[in-house]
Amino acid sequence: MLNKSLSVAIFGAIGGILRYLLQLYFDARFPSFPLSLILINVLGALLLGILTGGLLTLLDTSDTINVGLTTGLMGGFTTFSTFELALLNQLTVAHFRTMIIFLLTSVILSLILANFGQFLGGKLLKHYRKDW
Picture 1 (cartoon, rainbow, N blue to C red):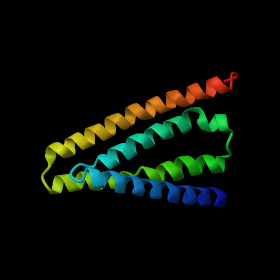
Picture 2 (spheres, helix red, strand yellow):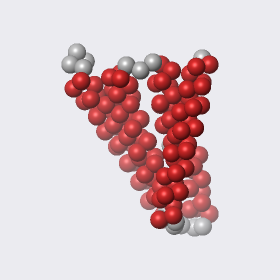
Picture 3 (spheres, rainbow, N blue to C red):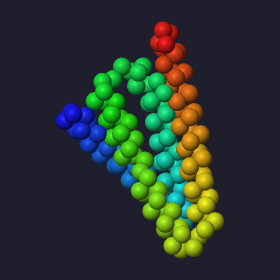
Picture 4 (cartoon, rainbow, N blue to C red):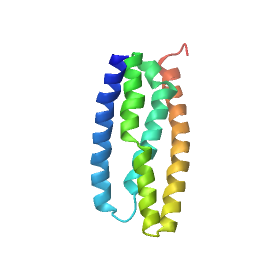
């Protein structure tokens, strides 16, 4: 339990730092639209799908690493609270159209890419481990 908690903490810190750096980069270029959060959440959904779809099995990682990569890294990289805050900020400044576009784009693309990631992860697993 302690090892898994430490794994989540360490990988979560890495995920949070990566998210922060990507936000800085994209927010400087697109200050009026939360493009950084869409990209981060969509990328995170894709990567989590790949991990859980077969990559972790293919790599034969331990449960401690698995929980660190999924709950820690991907949980720290993507965050619902930041997503909600961005929605609230758009609502506060009465950018209803931007808020709806942001909401629908984030949710729909994340679901599609999480599913695609699961598919890719399964393909990787079947390609490199013929017995699966």
